[in-house]
Length: 528
Image: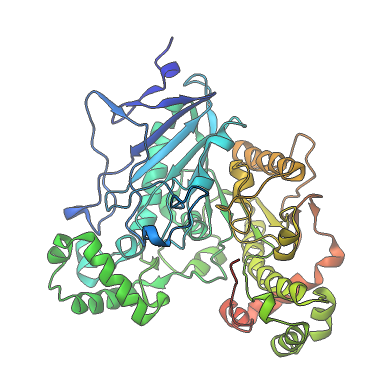
């Protein structure tokens, strides 16, 4: 019996002992960088240290410092035990990754799927229940890797003194963490039976924004081959990188607020003390007055749109898309068809008749769903824009819109929400009711859709082309609005339905995404 058969592998830093789960070998809590604590706080990730003996890699390590639900806030299961979204601790020492491999030998050279979790880059972890790698790696010949990275304040704080210390740049530590994890995978994945020349980075929501930044960054050349950007295009969207100078000034203001005189003092402060102060700060100035990714002059040498427009982004294969009801805009119990009609007239005075025909509604429930659909169709244009640029510069892109709904009346009423693709991609059976973490009893159509989606995603990871094995054709983006609608009857969106996309695309050329979405009715989702 080989060492690999015993779930024991040697990486550059030393030996790892994982465990066997069916046909999988699983390794959890692997350090891909040195702990970002003490003098490493607010610095780019450093190389991980080596170890002697055999390091146990059988349990998840901590996720980044973030807002954590108190026990009283957490929903309980049928036994009354609080259920958290992720089985995790939350600590500053968080730069770890997890590997699920179905390889039988280190020579198998399987394709690799690296997952960057969502959460707006302020929350989440690589050990969330819905992105456990078992259901994807266990069904397809693909290695799944999930990562943690620094979030929020610890991931993005910038300050003029840090910029001087960093040779002309500061901030974006979370993006450097993502890059460091990808470098570790490229250097070590062969030991797990993976192919270092077939690595796909996939991210959803905030993780998609991070993945988009990786796609644009000159620092990623030669590290990975493909990206999958799910529900988070950043050409048009909520998450736009600020100029570093804006974040530096916020850093000055924040340090004054907490009576901190130097970066050395800031590095000595307790991480949770800083986090609590930062939460109070953002509560006063607003979420968008906090720290997020920026045009730092190095990872992103200039504005994202400028990089993309000039064709200076990496030559990675791209799969990108979103869901058809990403935004739970209004509560149908407090909405009406009359309010919907008023909204259409107010928000789209130049195109009311078409909007009325494109998005009909006879009940308040249908009207609420259509408001969400409109917002989501506008969001889809960010994916279309990136695909247009890929086409212009001779790169490959595949665009998707998922409209698969839960096979219940509530599923049909709500549509396909943000995160809806995740349970199917990861094969997390019986999850996905309004939210990928919520229980939902799958029926035959759900299992069929999982097989379809995992087939597309696996083929893209393996070859750069999602097609094959008799799946409905998903065309390479070759003409305007070549979008594959993923549903129970998957198909390319027909030409007669494209007029609405052409309208939005033209509109977004002359007005901002935020202005367009700002015309939506007030967000007031209702949880039942």
